Image 1 (cartoon, rainbow, N blue to C red):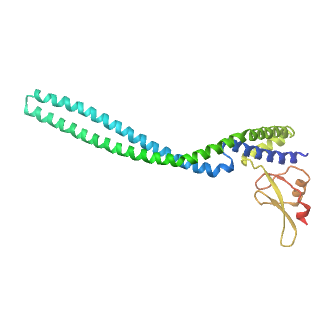
Image 2: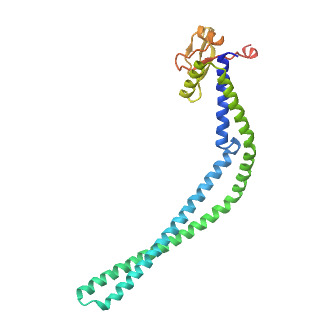
Length: 248
């Protein structure tokens, strides 16, 4: 196997390995639609739970404010008999009125929060009831996927071994060149040479990645296994012999 053939095989193996790792980190294709529906419905439940929790927190704060203001009211009312001047009496009455207004506001907030909490809990219960069947189906499919994961993990390990083997068979310079291109092109370091015919029927070649023309001499050298670049996108060019039946 030429180094160019090894590079082509390495590119393909790395693509398969990336797909296997992505699958392990995510969900399989056959679960995509179910996962999307599950995530959407679960997000609705989580949001409603937050609404219920927030309204309950506001209720507690309002009730605490009521209790605090009532203590202040008792304190001020206890001072009424102790004032000695009209001015002190007027100031105390003003404080009492302010506290009473605070109590009223806090009580209204508590009532509003209780109503909001009850509505959220009712909606949450309905959402959870509707979610039960979907949750069971999702868990069943997830369990199925977990049972399949070891096979995918074994395949990924096999591909990793193949990658190491292919890399070890390449010269340092060629491997370094491939890895630089692989990183720069986000895993797409190679480009197939495509053959076309112009209006006169003359054979022409171009880069399969960027469609830039490939000179006939370059195309023939690539076909012979030489490692050459596209003059435009700089990817390593490779050649796949066409199927005789397709050519015919």
